[in-house]
Image 1: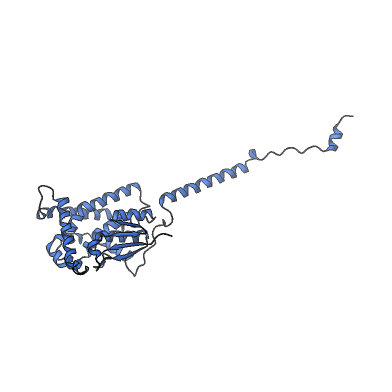
Image 2: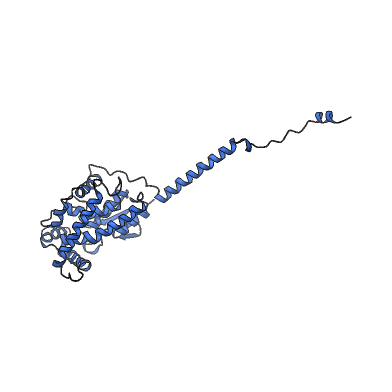
Length: 307
């Protein structure tokens, strides 16, 4: 019997199961792959300062970071990507890298560095979900981490200050959203009729920007011009996170991964081929079993003997 899995993450609001991008990615993937996890929000606990979320606990294993958690779930045979071709798998990795490089810095700035959004939305929310006195520490710690990360990744010469970086990161983010919108087109998901890990990542990045009531956000204004990306988020929320719509079953991969399934099909094909060959051999006149002539009787032997 498989060990029970527990997922620690930030809690939900704004119509989302979590307001935290990384937590949203993992929550979406567990729904897509059919993984049964117990969700344990860290809100109002000391873990708001000490824990690194999302964190998946399974037996003696503790896995952090969305990419590592998704890999762990695949090893447990919860794989939403098993139908992808090699080309689609490569595209998935490329688009996830694009999200990290182009969209994440702008999201960090929007929620944690923009003074109006931080004062009126982000800081009050995280402070209200942290116990005293952590309600003074947790938002400031996240804001400082976000600013450092932006400057570390985007503050190359001659852009050294955050005001100099803003224009670049928002331009990159809008370009990223445009590429995602073009790639999605009129489809519900990025590859086929079932969501995959790429859908989980895009949902985790875009849904907070779509749902948050931001006082100031040129990036959110740009997203609202891309109807298909907003519809993409709404579709996932309605199908996988609404109590009115039970989650559809995961792809038929519950008991075997793709390699095992292909191997089984190959073995069955070869077995059928062997059976056909046996049938042909049995029905062929050239391969009928040779029966020796019956021994002549004693009487016949005597009659044929000369006197």
